[in-house]
Length: 158
Image: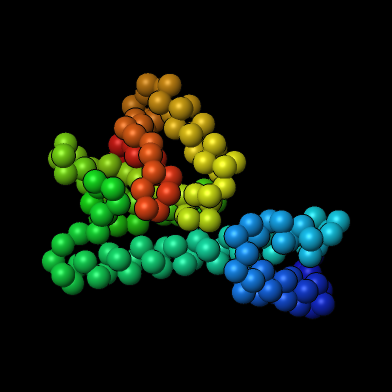
C-alpha cells in the first residue's frame, strides 16, 4: 500500500529537519520527534541512511576519479581501490589490490554513519568471525578487519 501524500510530506519534513539539525545522535532526535510512531521513525531513518550511503559512495567515486586523472590509485588503508563491486544494507564492497602481498582482495566498508553505530560494527565483526571460522572454496577467506579514515573495513579474498 502506498503511503498517503500527507504521510510522505511528514516523512520528508522530518528528514529535512534531522538532516539540517547538525545533531550527532540522530536516533535520539528522531525518537523525540516521532514519539511512539516507530513506523514514521523507521521511514525517516531509512531516508537518512540512503542519503548517507549515496554521499559515501559519491565521495569514494570522486576520490577514485581524482586520483585516476593524477595517474595514481585511491587507497583505503594500505589497499589500492580498483572499482566498486556493489553496495547494500551493510555498506559498500570494493575490488582492491594489496600491494604488500601483490594480490586482489575485496573490501567491505561501512559508511561513516554506520561506522559510529556500535550495533553495525558488532554485526560486521560477527560476520567476519563467522566467515573466518569456515574453510570452503565457495566462502571468501577473511584476511583482516580494521578501521581506516572511513571506519570499519572487512578485507577478504576477491
